[in-house]
Length: 245
Image 1 (cartoon, rainbow, N blue to C red):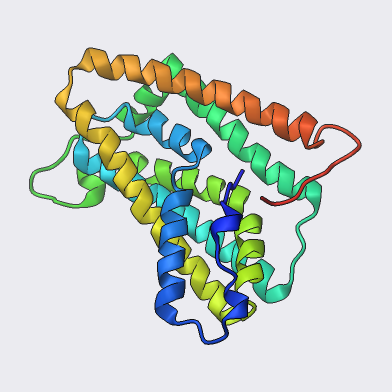
Image 2 (image 1 turned 180 degrees about the vertical axis):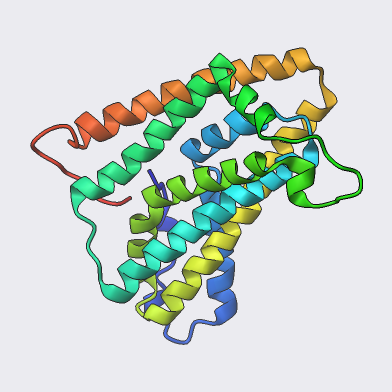
């Protein structure tokens, strides 16, 4: 589910004197590119298409990226530092969790349940209290964070293995993970802001149409991933063949 253009990534292990700036630059670029993976775009679109606020759209991207980064750094660092090996069924199960979340988000979007939950947990803003929680609501803050955490599970093993192949030093590899996560946050913020701008300028009818489209896309893509993971990669069969990629 993590689709790196591996042939474009330089082999940093061949350059022991590689500068910190080079690693930071590479991490930011690949992190921003990773934010545009199809499963990420579909997931955040189910949330952003219901919002008509540019600041909230940007915040959704930042929180999604933060959740994704936390999982990538924690799980990836454990793999790098403790030489953990992810069993194929566990790796596929982590990816299946993303597929399940996409299907659930799509269903909640199409049925309007997500909108009702959002309104239920979003209090009326109090002008005297200018806090994130009061302005946007706790549910709007926790939802993209939780989705990002789940998405990070699907890519953590692949990120860690790719980083180790480039940077043999464990310390530098973990530092790279953090920079990679920052790039993902920045990329997702740019993407959700770009989604939120036209929504803020159009009517509610357009918003409803995009909500339906994003919901259907989320369900269809989630079902495709279930088939790919369950039958092509073999999670639901006796023969599992999973390689983090």
